[in-house]
Image (cartoon, rainbow, N blue to C red; front, side, top):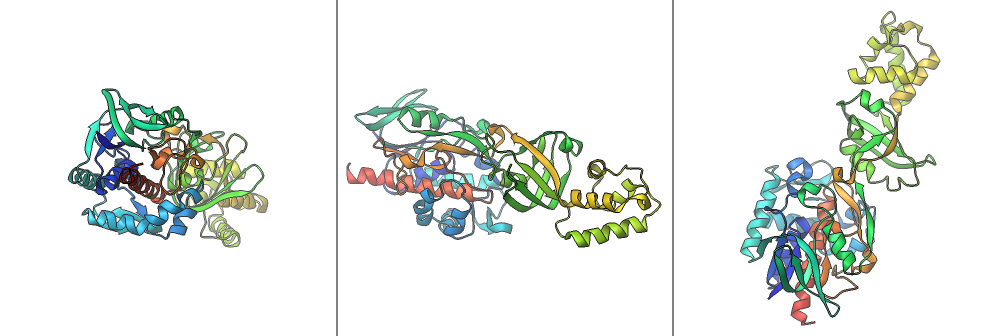
Length: 414
């Protein structure tokens, strides 16, 4: 008889298994992949952004959906505790821009290796199989049905992730099992995802990466739903890059809203300063073609687009550019508009928005309110955050809460 089965060997599952084992429970960690933590390998561009070095209120401010539900879990296992946890496992950490915390080695594999060693030392049995369903008896979870047979236990922690990056094993199995257990699953949608454009402006600039640009996202009413500054990438389908991924988390209603992205190509200059710069460039290059002048102001791939949108022919002499044309160029430089058709497929998203309805889960214990012995952790829940280590913080906090509660259930004998 196994006390607790944790389904899913990602961040939340590993934390849940370690925590439960530390409380004396016998734990089996069921993972369909040959290796644990496949998604961890690709987080933070392979460096594993384990958390964000900030306060609990700041963590919650970076969780746009159901942050109140996470208050208890994050308060009891905040970023400072996550940092101490990994330092104790022998993973030295460092904090970078924006509070992002990484292993000093810049290797996600160090985080995964440390978790694997800790699991082995704690006596957690790592079992490779795909969970096909939950065994339920008299209103309680009694085990898990795998592809290789049935496993009996006293409690199950579902930590199967969402549906983003399916090649890592996140294929939505947890949603199906939760629904079979009677839970409501909010339709999964992509979050932290590249954006597809309407039209072909981005395609003309495919491969161009811009640093330190400003972005403002507006909805169909003209309301700004996101403002930020950073790096973005033009692709054959639209927009990508860290700044765009962050912006996408604020674009949560594509069914009813139309969004546009306004890119400030010169965020360090206000309009008056930029206009003086344009006047100077046109004056100093009076007899040269307009596209030659633009070479002083923008990367090569941007020049045809700026000429098109400003309405100034590329071969127009600088001294022939009118004040009205210069004004239009200024407007484009300070607000290059990209109309968004929608997000890229959920398979390309970093995280999934949607999942098990949190009103059906105890926020302190992560226990199902519908079925005794069932717990949830991580992305399978309807919670997601912005970039910067906040999604992994959710995984660690909910995994720890679920592990403690499941072990406590056994100790209470109920």
